[in-house]
Image 1 (cartoon, rainbow, N blue to C red):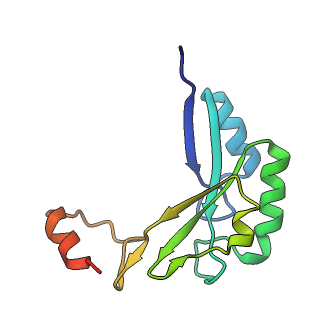
Image 2 (spheres, helix red, strand yellow):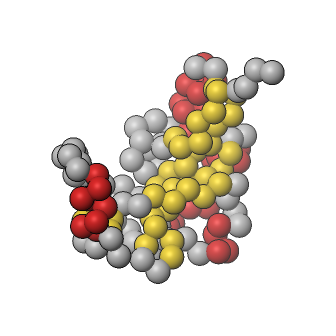
Length: 126
């Protein structure tokens, strides 16, 4: 049995990607992806970039639906839950959780290597 190539974590210009939904679909199909989801960054509780603004959420899902792809978002994992409501989750096919900040340490734009992962985990343990 041959398995499809799968990518369930693709971003577009709705958040921090550089391509439109159509360009992502065309490129994904040209590269032979059998299954793929578009999962732009989204938060209902923060307007910080590079997250998709709340007012674009419905048009984003409509664009994904029109493109015929798996409709998803990547949300922030917070200390008391996630950055999307249960009602909005029901509108998506897939919701990915991303741990972007923990105890004031922002993982988002800090590209320094973690030289000692065990020590790092101990330092950010809740």
